[in-house]
Image (tube, rainbow, N blue to C red; front, side, top):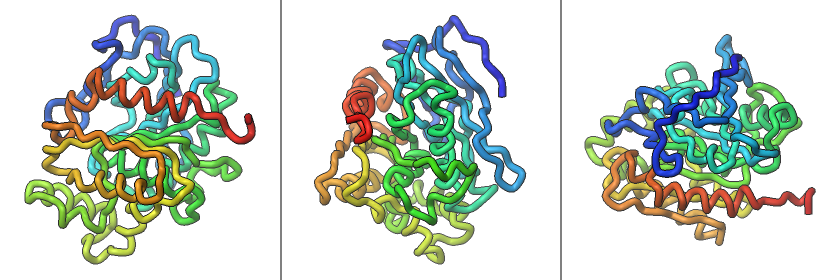
Length: 311
């Protein structure tokens, strides 16, 4: 664990906005953005060790904030690649939110449900460490992009699920609940995603799901159902914001429609923002308009959240 020096320079524009993806639609950015002035960073904070692999997260604390809400950020990469240490959008931190970018075991290291168990373990750890680091343990939300959005939505809709909760990192006296979730172009129903996919999308999703499930998706139907947020939605689930491009060639927009519909059927707090003309990632998801939308959602559901214990 190391404290990174505060960087005075910044590449962020538009009141702290940056593009979390490179122009290429299928990979994470090649480099992280400069950390805004005054933000404190703890790199590679270990929250668990599983089968000899350390699981770590990076924690970003906003300047001059007192007990800020915490956002848990889950990176994408088709469940098989990506890294927690390439955060390239600090708009949320500049708006006064703490942010924890969480690493998890990739599908090449462990099949599902290891990924969501790691994320839940990270949330329990973060709650247990709240007093040490200074954020509010009761106001925690989760956000993710692409495969990370799938995992974020799954974590948000499976509170108290004994199989998906797991025991990674311990802290079993702590909850992995979140009070809100944001999904950027994520999957929600892994039993229908292949039927909805374009030929281009199938070339990405079939090997991705095969690695995730440890075998061909058609032979892992029960596992696919377990991994699908739409089948876990119930009346206790937190508010949800979905963003998806109507020109996404590899993650069918119907995946977000399905999760939106599952929430609406129960009268839950949900908003689906269709990003017209957008593909899989890109500037349109993180421009001033959409960032303001996400921040308004977070302010309403997370910043203003008051737990039963505080009422």
